[in-house]
Amino acid sequence: MLYNRDILSINDLTVEDIENIFRLTDFLKTEEGKAHKPLLGKSVALYFEKPSTRTRVSFEVGVFQLGGQAIYLDNKSLQISRGETLADTARVLSRYVNCIVARTLKDETVRELAKYADIPVINALTNREHPCQALGDIYTIKEKLGSYRGIKFSYIGDGNNVANSLLLITSKLGINFSIASPVGYEIKDDVKDTAIKYAKESGAVVEFHNNPELAVKDADIIYTDVWVSMGDEAEEEKRNRDFQNFRVDSRLLKLAKPTVKVMHCLPAIRGKEITDEVMDGPNSIIFDQAENRLHVQKAILSLILG
Ligand code: CP
Ligand code: NVA
Image 1 (cartoon, rainbow, N blue to C red):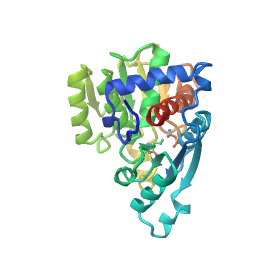
Image 2 (cartoon, protein in one colour):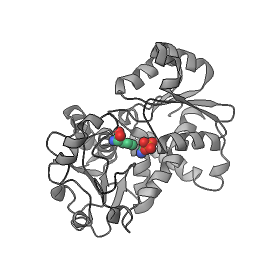
Image 3 (tube, protein in one colour):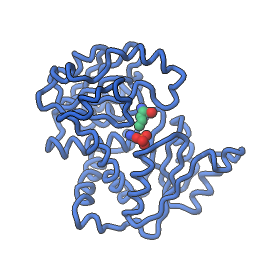
Image 4 (tube, rainbow, N blue to C red):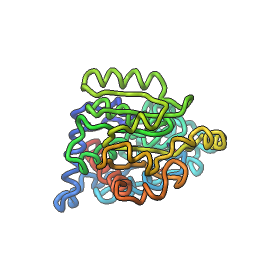
């Protein structure tokens, strides 16, 4: 049961929770599901400290479609910008709205919000995780391939927030995960250790490489993300140099299964981590993946608030 719970990390979800989210998403995508309004009379605050296109719009539209009201709150226009504490902000929002969806620079901030709020808090991206993205992504794989257990998922690039959530969800669900990151940009040991524990339980194989060609061998999915995440802008030049050999292009795709599907959480910097040819090519499922953020988040909100 997800009712009234926070989702701050993939670690907060059991396999059963994830399967329930996917089952409800299937229903919400049907004609009958489109009439489902479990958020009638409910309000959801979107507290954002960083830019967003997909997450903001898909949550705002999702809440509307479920019958509720979304209120976008940019931290710069709240009293928090003039010294009000995050704890007091969380306490006050809890008196007005039914849920907080938060995109924060630091993971500790979303945890602090959850600590002081009396209402559920959903992580909409921090420097450490992006759980809603990972849920939408695995749902998309299930939709495209029919199932996900036992497939090979290859991630090329930075061991960042998106990579962390993907490693945790794949190892939990029995999906084989293989990542290639440049030296110095690998997934951190604490996340790796948790994933290795999940993989022991699920039977997933997890592999960590520094060579993209090794990581994509016979892959069912190739996934990539930007070389420079929000907050890493000061390192842009160095990162652009260090990630030169971590571009998803048609040459790399040839090493995977012929049926390989290409995914990207977006926004993409075309010509850097992914070529136009791959992004717009026949293997790309990137825009269906973006659409599914809406449907999966509607399922999450329905289960937490419904
Ligand atoms: N993928 C994703 O979260 O995109 P936005 O930053 O546009 O929300
Ligand atoms: N890793 C990227 C994901 C954007 C959705 C970032 O944090 O900027």
